[in-house]
Amino acid sequence: MHYVASGSMSLGSLGLLRLFGASWSWSLAAGLGVYLGTGGWRYLYVVVRTAKRDINGLYVLLRVKLALWHHIRNRNTIPSIFAQTVVRHPDKPALVYEATGETWTFSQLDQISNAVAHWALSQGWTAGDVVALFMESRPLQVALWLGLAKVGVEAALINFNLRRDSLLHCMGVSASRALVFGAELVDAVSEVSSSLSESMVWFSTGDLRPDQMATLKCHPLDSILASAPRNPPPCAVSKDRLFYIYTSGTTGLPKAAIVVHSRYYRIAAFGYHSFRMRPDDIIYDCLPLYHSAGNIMGVGQCLIHGITVVVKKKFSASRFWEDCIKHNCTVVQYIGEICRYLLSQPVRPSERQHRVRLAVGNGLRPSVWEAFMERFGVKQIGEFYGATECNCSIANMDGKVGACGFNSRILPNVYPIRLLKVNEETMELVRDKQGLCVTCRPGEPGLLVGRINQEDPLRRFDGYASQDATRKKIAYNVFKKNDSAYLSGVEGKAGMAAIADSTGNFNCNSFLKEVQQALPPYARPIFLRISPCVDTTGTFKIQKTRLQREGYDPRLTTDQIYFLNSRAGRYELVTEELYNAFEEGRISL
Image 1 (cartoon, rainbow, N blue to C red):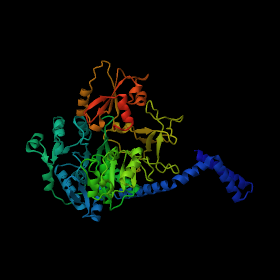
Image 2 (cartoon, rainbow, N blue to C red):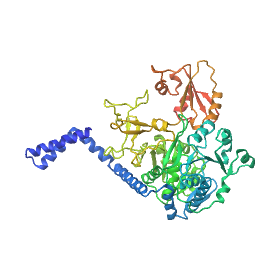
Image 3 (cartoon, one colour):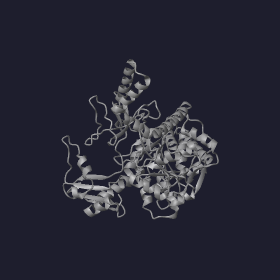
Image 4 (cartoon, rainbow, N blue to C red):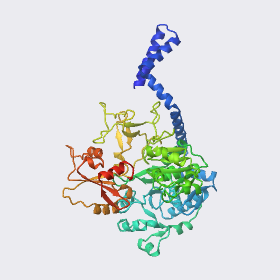
């Protein structure tokens, strides 16, 4: 608004001088002087500093938007876009399974996914039915959801770390009619088998003993697909939904996020154009295929842009660079602490003998960023931010260290996202006298939101399988009256659990055993704070701000604080010496 006011005063001065007969040169000079004198120089400074970045961002935005409109107008789906890729690159390697060295060409991936489609039709499944996939990362997982999508059946991509209640919840919330599981997860499936619906059909892939097959009453999917037809299946009635991807569930049970065809394309295309990927790239994908980073940002480059993707079953810090050399990878993916794990490895010749030029991912700490590039010789970091379901994704297109993206200061409404002020006590949005949300100033922390427009594939919000979960992520009267916006939230890595124990009988070992059975490793509390009681506000809400401020520093509280030593498999009391080790980086969290 300040820049608008300066511009208005400048134009007013220009008009007034012309009215009194001043020449154009004098009027323009005076108008410019007024503009600069009233603070307009700040805007010009911003324009000079950010114009190149913003023009590049606008180019990417328009390119993706035009492509999306084209695909929507022609009713293209991810399977039909993939069919076009197969025509362009029939014999090129599409997916390479690093564990075995097995390579699938684009034609082979197409044929195997056709076999999946025919199998689905033979089961009587129709458009809108859901099949759960529960397996470690492998090319077959891609062929399964792609083949199901060819006949309109939706896949539920379930985190292979889940067990018991969380696993049952994910199966239930998606209303899956069948379960396909990898033989490596038979124990997890056995734990919940008695609690699943008797009408659910089970299929296994991999080597399973005959007695296990009989006990679980499951069918051998590998042999079924081997004998299924590989010609294209009959065209299905096009449904908007492609598959479900689940949130991590660190702050509660996982939510099934709806991924539609346009969203899949949008995420993959933004990554491709934002970070200047090339058709001859080879991507090393060591991220799980049940999440969008591995399955959309990674595998999506294969299906849409014809890039070869190397699928790694599980991340290995010691094998990372050797794998990249073996497969001539030029792009790698990371998430969270992967880059720090690589930096903690002993120096090896292989870490400088690779061809990797780009690392794409999110969650890279600024303190690790430059050290990673310098040590391993990676020229570009493609950091981005964006949950699977969000409409406010951002990307670092200019390589600024520590940044996960930007919003244009010159044309902020082209991509309407904002950082909004939040009450730190209640985590509710701060509103002005008109009831609208308050935008953060540069440097202020806030909550990222994106204006919702269901008619725009870049700004729509498809929500979750649960309508209640969907409603909780939408705010109203945000930018203007009667509008709506997606709330990016505060979900993240589990940190500290504060436990009220008035008896003094809390047992950390028993607690850990229960947590290990109920929660995957990433959702287990790293710290425990044991208090005689929990402070509450006048409205009986927990006083989280003080706990957050004090953190795990034992000098700031008389409460006992414990740290989860994952290597030792136990919680240990945090002493001042242990706290200093955390702060100095001698012990990683």
